[in-house]
Amino acid sequence: MLVLYPELERKELIDQSNERLLPLIRKIRQVFEDHFDRTWFAIIIDGLPIDFRTIRIIRELVGLESIHVGDEWFIYQAVVELSRFSLLIRKFLLPVLKERLGVSGLMPDRIIRDRYQYILRRFVAYTFPYNLERLEALTAELRMHLLSAFPDLEQQS
Image (cartoon, rainbow, N blue to C red):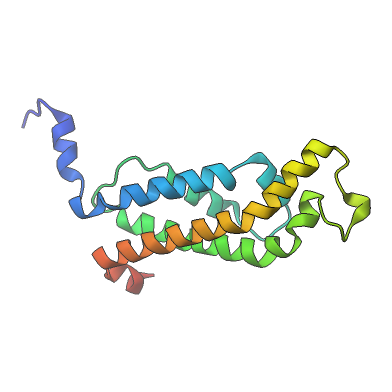
């Protein structure tokens, strides 16, 4: 069979029930790339028990531009990794965030001396828990929408 318009054929492969997931993935992309996929963040999580595979899978998820039939299993696995990522950040980084950023009054010998950097890092320390909560809420929403369309995914894992 000769296909004159391959882009039309590819459109048919897209599952319409999955199309509603894309706006959520875009929101997760914005939060993840703006607050968690930064060089400064990679430096402060150094030494924490976060697997690079987890970060890679999350990056693949937020890089999705379209969803096709069969992608739901990958998206579910990425949601599991996002949940694991949030849990590890909450457990291992939040309690020592100010110390790792160099703005803790508990460690005066490690405080950043550059006033601009100090203000910037204090701002990051102040907003970081909120941004983590946003990532967790969006992840939970994506999981809910995914499982409402594909309830068998939870039994498969």
